[in-house]
Length: 209
Image (cartoon, one colour):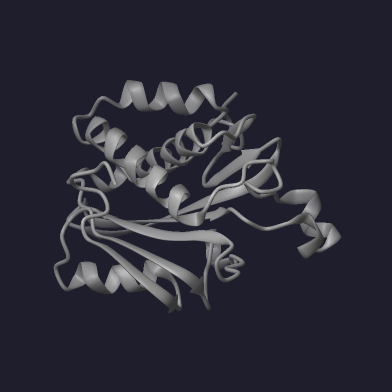
């Protein structure tokens, strides 16, 4: 990987309950910023509001990254924006197109969900002590493997015509996080927000057009 912080160390597991759970435990024990956990399979993968995330072995990226941004708790939403921008840019570099963001945690390819981001922060005295950025990306799934209902709402890199390995997707995402995280820490939020808005990030936020 072409990174110096994000993904160092990168801990790889065959099976976990969820990568977020593993990394939250490590964070409490003092794991350093940039620590990442990736798994081939999750038995209890989840999305926003506890919704389950299908974690078929070897067919998707199941990744979590530990950040210690030292920002106010009120700015936690910026971490979701960071995650969305990083995932979109990584997938674009791998050859996907027609990608958009939908608040708070969806990445869409031609209006179908290809990835999701789950931010789980620990708050202390009004600030973020640490945050686990969970990322799930559909990579190798084929249309015939999904129900008709799922085909209507979801897609994968393979279904979008991009044949790429989960390892390559993981590396691309970690490198984009490495590129954009300093921008957030330096409070250059205008650059981050511009990237997010260009990809439709405001869609789905009540009261914002």
